[in-house]
Image 1 (cartoon, helix red, strand yellow):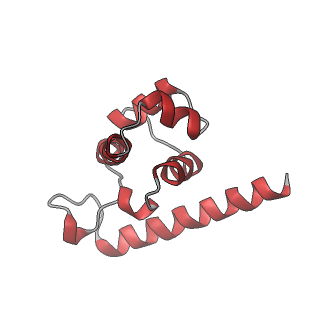
Image 2 (cartoon, one colour; image 1 turned 90 degrees about the horizontal axis):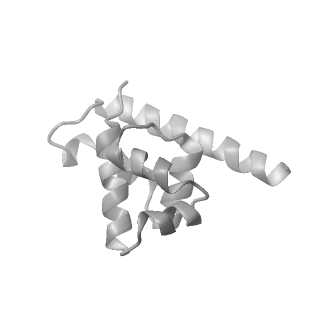
Length: 104
């Protein structure tokens, strides 16, 4: 399974711009650095599940929206069943991270 991180970054940038937010504002809200957010948006760095979760929370978008389905993508990087498995794993990782934060 291979994720197109440039596409993920493009979707994050689109959501940020839709809210008329700067990279600085989103980075601050998501507890990240502006530099790292810039790399994520350009697809030059991979974001962890926790970072993606925080960004999506602040942008008020679903994690699923970062990973296009075959129906809405002309060039999907994963097949539908692979994508569903990847999303389930990502959701599970986020659940673990969230539960871990609550216990500390």
